[in-house]
View 1: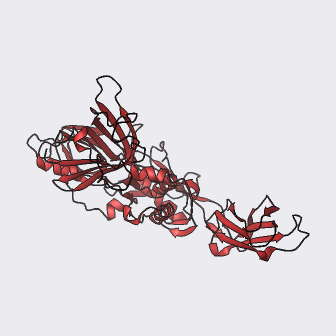
View 2: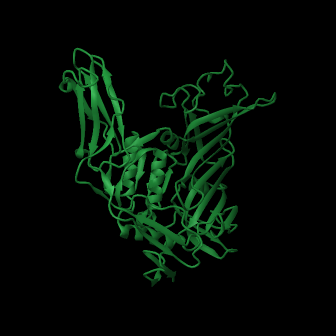
Length: 490
């Protein structure tokens, strides 16, 4: 094998791999890793790395106090797999999950597992709140989510997307869940590249940004330089397939109300404040604030808890901060020489409230027996909803074949091609038995290497490139259901 791999772990947690014992390449018996999704819907599953390590000297035994790694094998340590030849490329960046040494007397190995560091960091970011934004694409929302958790700008690759959301905000949900909502909103794809960067592609990305030229064609010809060793074909119709013939998308606008509405009131008043004390009050509410400029808070303070003493409102500093669509912080500082009592504290905003009755777009093709599993949440315009369901029916109303290839790096050309592959690559696949010669999108990539210089095996899960479909409109009034249309493909 001409590929040169380097496997490293940042045991010290200092952000590099330059310390002693951090290059563990020579101790790897077997390595496997991968990333992507198994079908054509949703975000990618967290990528996983497994390393079978030589533990002859018990250095990978966490209980061994004489190990040079004792006390350093902690969850979250960065593990990296990269190549230096035939070209340099980062293949996987993970966060250490566990190290399990074989406890048997003749056990000389340890199993290291790690998950994609990017998704681990996002999952651990916890709940987020954002400001409300209007008339934005899912890509802009993805950017806002990543900004909220402090995600480095250089570690992301974000497409704008196609759907226009009337209003969008995140309110106390996990960042990973918020990102998943944007995948559903645009029927896009969210995954981690081999170099650890987060990538979001809207539903039109492959059609508008990607080249239609295949990167490589794999076939079953024995003399081919790019011959696959195994192939599995699924037409996409069965229970695990991606055939859907009913789609629904609600559309409901949120209009900014004209008057202030009190959405939060401190229920703990009177609140005692010692001289010099600083206290933060977290205000939360359900209906999102339409504009931070339309947020006010009413406050009163007094020297007596029943507000019968001296008015001290001006002796306290009141600061509204961390304003989001459904959450804000009020910081109060008692600058008075004696005890003060907060007797009134509430927050009023000009909220965005649902205006009018919900509309919906729905389409189906015969037989209408499989409903699409997700719906957009933030669409306000019926035309946008209609475009969403039309895309679903055009894309998923006919089967999308899934092909899984098993490939071995039996020559240098194959090694190079396998090393290059990433999700959303366009490749060609030929198979005489199936009568197939078509273009496919790579959905997931999995590698397995039998130690440094060992046999390299790659599995690609691919979806057939969907050509543009046309249809005739048969009904505009539906069968008693509002906004339903029935279409036949041609």
